[in-house]
Length: 179
View (cartoon, rainbow, N blue to C red):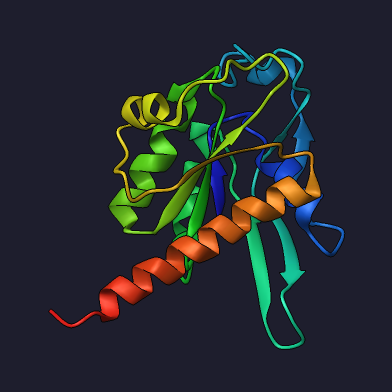
């Protein structure tokens, strides 16, 4: 799963890293949604995901990673529940200019007990904060990886997926350790 707040770059990430042309459900923002989709910090945004984005990456001949990008607006969060079923892990995209837009995604990962990494999407006008400040502001534990990346860049997006896979592998190894 690729989750996060409105305008954090979920669709952009799926587009940049998918081996196939992704399925997207973007629709044009209209005046009718102005009272619901607040564009503070994302004034240039013209489209929004209304259901999900889907892409995939072939790891090898027999292993495929499916990517599901969630909608960011609160009015579409009910769709997240179906995406949690069978999810091995998630990436929570964060825009450091609007940290609060990703609080709900982090809360939901914790509530659903879905392992996740936090990916700081670096926008041109973003400030560069130390990871510990971000971790404290988001109230996430030290064992949750935090990585900076550019959702528009395929290799940068791939590196976030690799970080998630390593995190899942580490969690599995810890779970298998004798007590």
